[in-house]
Amino acid sequence: MKVCFATNNKNKLREIREILGDQFEVLGLEDIGCIADLPEESETLEENSRSKAKYVYDHFGISVFADDTGLEVDALNGAPGVYSARYAGPACDSEDNMARLLREMEGRENRTARFRTVITLILEGAEKQFEGIAEGIIIHEKKGPGGFGYDPVFRPVGKEVTFAEMPPNEKNAISHRGKAMKKLVDYLKKLEE
Ligand code: IMP
Image (cartoon, rainbow, N blue to C red; front, side):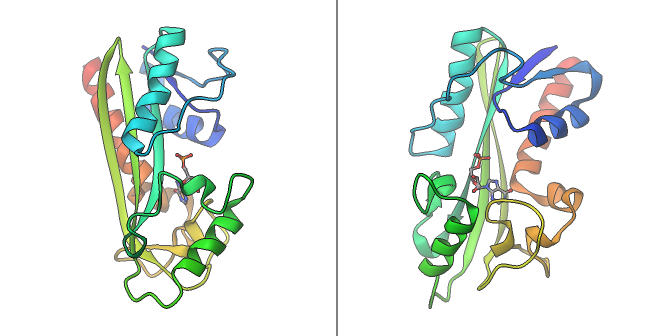
């Protein structure tokens, strides 16, 4: 079965190809000739992942899944949430985003937060969504060299280290995206049985 993962992120593509194995041919956006910026202007992860998947399905007629992730901090009423990638401004990077987050969290006692990933799958026109959540806290200063995004300031529940201090396989086993991907993979593999 051929399915497009609506991303240009080579790491995400490699990871899902490894998990799904030979039964599925996973194509990236580049592979299907999609060079447009996919629409993600909505206010929820659900709508954003759906609009990206729908764009590909409508324009390329191929079965597709798309993911969207946000960091939801309770003391900030769920911010940065769907705006996680551009929290410190449109031209900012992860360092700027973490700096803003740590600034906003100064003096706050409640530091609970979660990463949430939503994947929308459109398979021959039928839609289904999968969610993965990793609960944790925002620590007071960055720790760890690995990962990306907000990993150095996020310590998952039950662990002594941040996502940035874990090897990739340890993070993937408990991460929001890992959990959502597992649900997607279980669903796709069942279809092939
Ligand atoms: P995306 O939807 O996967 O592009 O994620 C949106 C933004 O959320 C990214 O630009 C990162 O800032 C943040 N993010 C997503 N996943 C992670 C993660 O696993 N660790 C840290 N930050 C993440």
